[in-house]
Length: 116
Image (tube, rainbow, N blue to C red; front, side):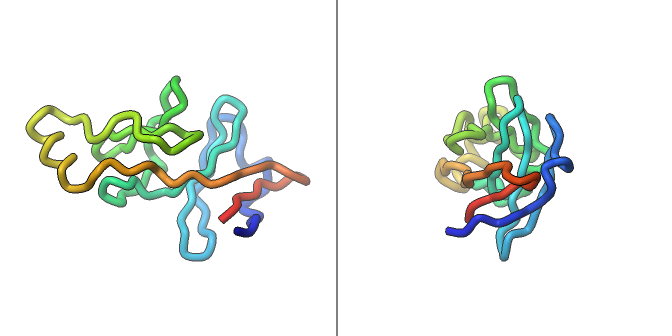
């Protein structure tokens, strides 16, 4: 795994998020509660983009499409397709619960680096 310089640290103030390409991967880099996070920009449920997802007070990102929630530190599933019972069960059955891919991220020498 290599560290990739993805953007200047000044471009990611508190509350900001950026989608970056690293090779074939699309990565969402964000700063929440003064901490950097890097996750795949594809929800593991239906591979839809997460970059417009809500960040919750308990440090999760919520998919804007079907409302699954994932812990930003571990990628663990906090909620899987919790739509109304009939729709949620149907959509939830399309794929098994799967954690969100989380990548090591750091700020160093004025840049933000992501390890892939």
